[in-house]
Length: 165
Image (cartoon, rainbow, N blue to C red; front, top):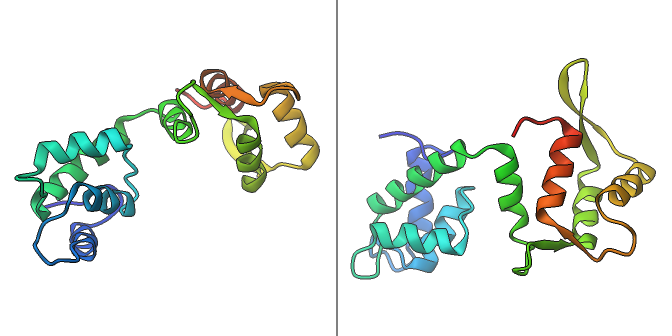
């Protein structure tokens, strides 16, 4: 019937069966969310609830409903532009203020150890050194800033990287 995101339907069904620990051919809302996330779909709690409510019957989602929800969310993810995906990923760190801790951003960038830049008209990833990391963080947020606005960070990242929104 078709793939679900980057996984085959067979892989998705296998994942479903792993979360169907009671072998009822049905998942609770929590298991449903875990199944989708295990398949690299990563919906928010709100999105899980909405998808679950669309496909569940009597508080349980069967494999066909879970597949349908997975396909729907995979299409949604594929249609999002890179800047929207970036903002969405940052919302995991957002405490509801529209900002993220600058220490967390620094840690993420330091762990990536790469930057995206345009060289010869193409986007390439190149290593980032400690000095460049310090400079980038200073551009995004002054040393005194403990929080970074998600909007400001997204604008800066996509301006610097020249990635089309």
